Every structure is written in C-alpha cells, then in structure tokens.
Length: 308
Image 1 (tube, helix red, strand yellow):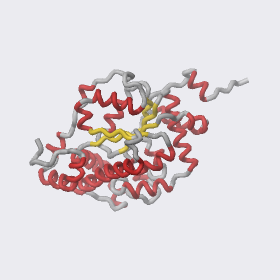
Image 2: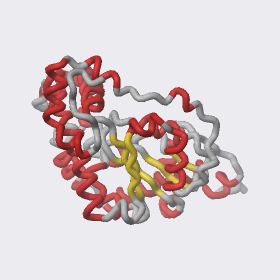
Image 3: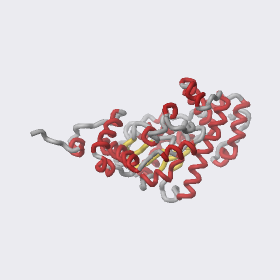
Image 4: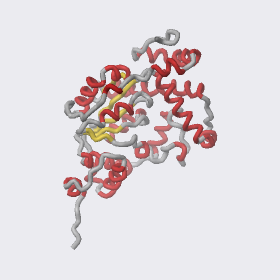
C-alpha cells in the first residue's frame, strides 16, 4: 500500500528545502494543494513600500542574510496584480503603473476576488513555512497605493519605507524604464506612451512624490508609525552606517539582530553621485524645482549649481 505523506511531514523531515527562486514554484504548488494549512503558516509579515530605485533591492539583499527572515525571492507583482502585471501583456485596459499608480491600483484591485486573495495569503504562508522563517518579507515597489487593502489581507502587517533623494531616483528610474520602452516600443505606442528621456524625468519626478505623499497620508490616517507598523529610513543614512540600521530593522521586524549571516558592508556605498554628474545642469535644475518642496520636507539639500 502506497504511503501518503502530508505537506507538514515532508517539510519537517527535510525532504524539500529550498531558498532559491525555484521555491516560488513549489510554494505555489503547496498553496494550491493545502490552502488552509498554508494560510495558517504566515506570521509576522513585513512589506516594503515606497518608490522603486530607492535602494529597496540593496536592502532586501542584505536582509536575506538574516537566518530568521523568509525573504520572498521575487517582488510577486504577478501575484499582487494577476490581471494587469506585466502591463505589456495585460488584457485589461489599464494605465502604466508609473504614469498613473492610483488608476493602475484601483483597476487592478477590482479584478481580485476573496478566493484569489486567500491564494495570495497561502502562497506567502507556504513560502515562509518552507524556509522556516520567523518573519516573512516581501519587497515590491507597486504596493504603496494599496496599504489599506494589505492591512485587510494581513492584519499584522508592518511596512518598511526607504526614502532616497528624488533626483537620484528619477534619473535611475527614467533610464531603467526607457530601456523597457525601447524593447517593447510598439506596445507602448499602442497604449499612447512614446516618451523621450526628458519627458520620463518629469513623469518620475511626479511618481516619486506620489509615493511619498501616499505613504505620509496612510501613515497619518492609520497611525502606522505610532503603532510601530512603519519603519522609515533614508537611503543616504543607511549607506553611511548600514550595520546599525540593519540591527534596528531586525528589531522592528521582530527577529534577533545578532542572527545575520556573513555580510560585507564595505561594499555599501551611496550611488547618489551619479545624478550630479550624469544630469545636465538644465535638467537638474528643472526636476529640482518640480520636487523642491518634497526635498525640503525630507531634509535634502537645495540645489547649488552642481551640488558638491
């Protein structure tokens, strides 16, 4: 007679142990086969919010070194937005996220359903169970505008927000997206998008400010920081003293700050110098003027010629 093994038995016996991208596929299979069991495994969930190109990938990479944090290997945008991500292959009429994040998010959430949201919870729970983490961490730069929904799905959720000088973010994001547009030009043109670099700089100037303003709005409305649910950090401060900030993050996440594996923090250096040298003076002055009030609120220095 063939013996049947439960998911718990297999994983507790160590028959299947993954900490790579292949575990995403396995987590999905486990969630589909044992949905209720997988949902129950999710605990201590933490999510990144904020604008892309702000140092989120760097921070995620370093947090992976902690032995008790189950860091999901991808941004999971295909799970958060199953009908509308990636935009270039979406069958639903939806704006590009960085052009209209509010519209994209509103339309995307309308496509969801309670059963699908339970599946999302189950996938994350399955991954945490597989990797045996005390906390679960997911980094996406597309969930900023759905914080209330996230708290409905994950009532214990906490959020990490890394803030970077908007001028560095805008240059990096514009260069990154211009490559995507060039590679899928016909699709973007069909959607009404045909931007040059200067236009993208202005688009991402607004995009950066939209993220910061939305998080500030939700922080005030939901008292996230007061309740210990929001940890904000400046990219530039983190690069100056990554060790101290990683220990602070571990405490916020709820894990032992002494449980990091080997880390080479000497390689953590701010890349902000690039916007000062790669943006021409006119472009630098223009985007600085557009975001000056937000820069001031976040303590970034005003433009002085080419910024020393």
